Image: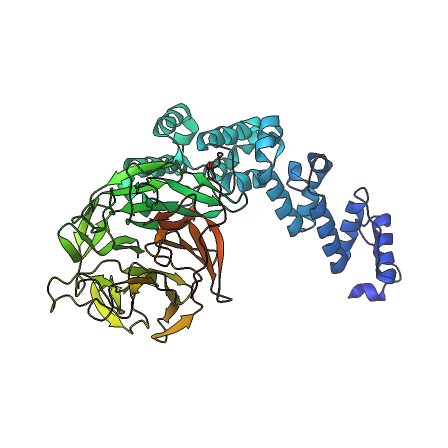
Amino acid sequence: MKDKDQGVVKLQGVNGQGLRNIINYIYTGRVTLGMDGLRDTLEAASYLQVQPLLQFCNQLLSSEVRGWDMFQEGLGPAGEGQNARELHLEEVQVRVREFVRENFSALVQSGRYLQLSVSCMSHSLGSHALKGFMEVELYHVARCWLDHDPTRHEHMLALMSCVRFPLMPPAELLRISQEDPALRSDPEYTQLLLEASTYQTLPFLQPTLQSARTRIRSDSTHLLVLGGVTRQQLAVSHELRLYDDKAGAWRALWPMEVPRYQHCAAVLGGFLFVVGGQDEYDTKGRRAVDSVYRYDPRNDHWLQLASLNEKRTNFHLSALRGQIYAVGGRNSNGEIGTVECYDFHKNEWTFMSPMAEPLYGHAGTVHGDLMYISETERMEGSEELLRGITRDSFKKELFCYDPVTDTWSQRADMATPRGLHCMCTVRDRLYVMAGNALLGGGNHSEGNGEYVDILSVEFYSPASGQWTAAAPMPLGQTDVGVAVLRGQLYVVGGYSWSSRCMVDVVQRYDPEHDTWEQAFSVPEPIGGIRACTMMVHMPDDLQESHAHESPLDMPTN
């Protein structure tokens, strides 16, 4: 460096007070700072690249991002944190934008949002976590910000691209397209309206038309439960509920249009699909239905889709490679071995390659691009065709379906036969748990005809092709809902054979530590319930019945 040979080195743009703070820090490792002299110290530390001091200033500024008064001093979004931007304090810039997003509603109500930078506006308008606004309101907010200063019109595309036009009511979208000539003045703006119009005019295709502008404005995934048959009066439920972790309570979403139990649920494209099941209590599946409904959490709305080709209950449903597959089950005609796939473009179900044998009460899950089915119950109508529930027998085969080749193949058997159980995937493990079987054997000829809970748990590794035992369940549950939330398994409701009653317990399994616990409970004892996880808007009202400790006793030997 040439500076080393000079007797005097001039530090251009470095304030004397800032330089004194730098020198004190170098000699003592300490510095006393206040917000009034922070800029001088920042400029000196940035010029001289004193990284430890820059990091300290970064932390100090971030901790002070908590009020509009600070922004007015030029350290906040009035200049998008001008000091932070000029001095490359990325942590501060991130905190400033998050502060604006968290307080965006208050800023809009006060009119102070008009002073925000384009960066802060884009961050808030594009955030999945932004709450308290309808999309049409956000359009008007963006429009007012742009019109507040004519020089801002160059940012129109950046802001309008953050507004989720596809999620607006059709009437509002039409009105905006007619009343805002600027949106029709450029092909890029017109494309935003065309995307929204296409999305709204093709409702059955919406799960396949997902983009950042069609995603729900929510940053939290919740456990949802739906349907089931209650212990009291064996009434079939049409309730759809989510569990609020923070409040420890259930909140009601818009209920299903019809009651369902022993149905199936799958999530695809941010939509919940509810397929088949029974609308009245019947232990033989004679009330099986073929109807299909889709729930949209963006607007809390249900849409009826094309019916299955066959009525089915006690079957499996999977979302696989952008398709929905219904596998097996039973109805008033007996057990089913057929497989159907839903075609979004045609809104119809198409038969695929059937399973080798009819069965019901089985479970399934998806790993990678394959669907796995753990076999279970077949009814014994034709003994050479149906082996295991043939007159209530339980099998332990595992089959794999490849949607690309439309073929089935067999994998290694489970250790324990079971029926009306559940199956789910966590990372590279396929867990099988819950369910029931016949005491003393896999079928009536081997056992005494008494059903028992299956407490054992095992998981299958597709890589090794082997099954491994896991920690057993503390309480037995049959015909349950199961879901994975934040890497943990939730087993919901069902029937306990040891207690001879439906239960309200929700058991949680931690795969990392191989442990079970009773997490909470559903509002009432219920069987044939189903569960899933998805992003939803948090309702304002609490469910009347809060979660409570389950009265079900631990089983005794």
